[in-house]
Amino acid sequence: MTEPTIVDKSAAGLDARQYHVGLAPGEVGTVALLPGDPFRVPMIAEHLTDVTDVAHNREHRTMTGYYKGRLITATSTGMGCPSTAIAVEELARVGVTSFIRVGSSAALQPGIEPGDLLVSEGSLRNDGTTAAYVHPGFPAVPDLTIASSLREVAEELVEGTGRGVFSGINATDDAFYAEGPEWIAELSRMGILNVEMESSAMYVVARLRGLRAGMICACSSNLVAGASLYSEKNAALKDGWHASIEVALETAVQLEL
Image (cartoon, rainbow, N blue to C red; front, side, top):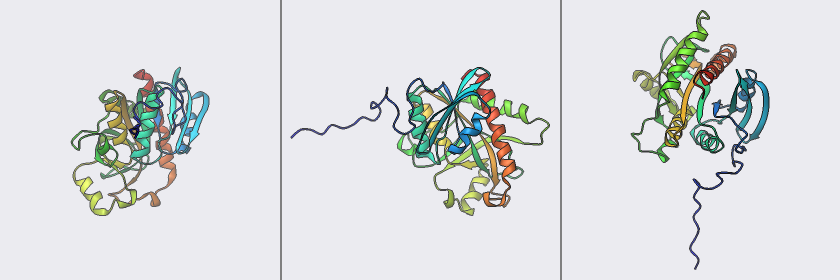
């Protein structure tokens, strides 16, 4: 009987068009902005010139364009760590070396308003995807230079606008509707700044693959101030998205990512 041939996913399709994101080598730049929602990819493109709509497969939409002479890739990850890990793995295969997540996130500390900017200094790994990659004690942390630059650029950008900039540890959860009052209160007591669903996978995969990553989010709601997504106006969040995109783009240029 012939022995079964086990597929090594780490070696399969390295020089091919990637199965999930639909991209091939040569179609992207070295830095990618990663929103979760594919409909926010065109929002990033509003800040770019010479825009090309490259691919849209499943939850992963990709557009490229130029910002201050630098080629920028924008690819949506979809919601959650599983699809984010796939996006980072496959984008790395086609040439991306740095990632900046620009997303939405719920605040967990008082005084943070919708539209404020939240810069991640690391993530509490409350997800299942990274457990498949690394030891439970392995930290999910951004590239420190990228994180520091995001904070500095954000503070410069919002000066005089009334918008706040906050930085700290965020949580990455798997189950949006399983975040009950007890869990929210516990995160807040630990000093966790905000909660979202993608960054821990981005950080862990980036570290394992020798890549760089950071995150700046717009505050969507404040879960310790009685404000859910269902009770907030969208205008402040949309303005926050645009501000976070500007910060990410300026950071990409300044650091030559």
